[in-house]
Image (cartoon, rainbow, N blue to C red; front, side):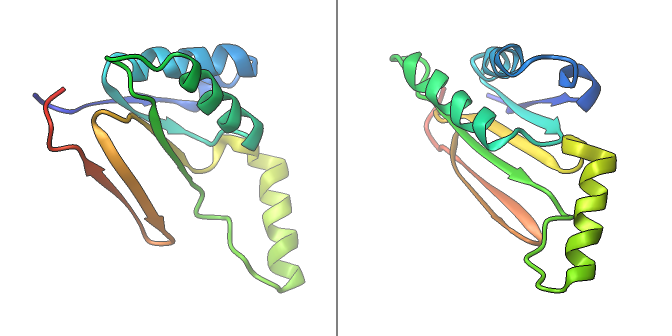
Amino acid sequence: MPLTIQYVPFEEVSDLDSERKIQKLIRIVKQNKLVLMEGTLTSQEEADLIEETMETIDSKFKGVEITSFNPTEKNSRQIQDKLKQKFMEMIWGRRRGLTIIGPANIVREIRKDPNRIQLFLSSRGR
């Protein structure tokens, strides 16, 4: 079966409260789609998403794999880099970066480093 990727633009979730945003993302993932969302979730939203999926695990839905990637996040020690990062956060907020969420029965593992994201897909059928 083909892998379906659903792009979720920032504008589609920016006006939603955290609960509605999480419900929308889970609905998409439960359709065996990989979500590619513009922007990132807060750490609390990620935790809530994982908690919500843990409560709905059954024989068909095995949970999710999630990762966020933000190219502007660097572990620089220089004050000017930190100030630049904070300024960009003020302007762009959580719009910068990407979030990938996939159903655990399809996405076995997600690895990321500063230059790439690797998705390891399950070899089993859906």
